[in-house]
Image (cartoon, rainbow, N blue to C red; front, top):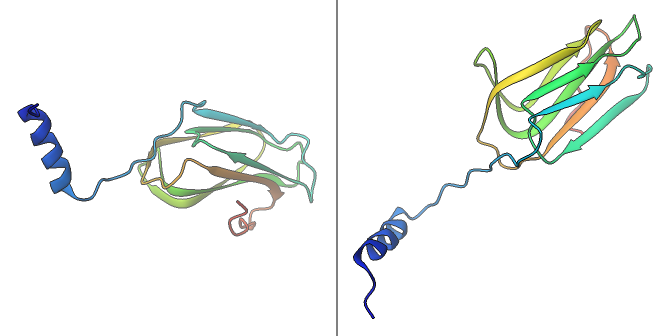
Length: 133
């Protein structure tokens, strides 16, 4: 039995390419996550381990009037914010007062679809700890 010519050509093209690029697709999970940190007290934190990359992260900040809510995100890839700036392997933002949604325009070069989000209280000079994931 003969192999059809289009099948043979496609097989040869795949062999000639040599290296196959692997793109990790974001699973069919919610594109958003809501974090309710309203009851968070000084010295407490929350850690979320996700198996998807949320493109919208809404934070309901702590009721603490002296410290804001810090959100530290850890992943293996690049998130591109709505201003077009790329953030490689980590991103953090500060929320104080009212509910806030951080939106991302795109995700690129991801090596896995896992993300860890660490939420704690801190002042203006707070820096995120090394990857807690």
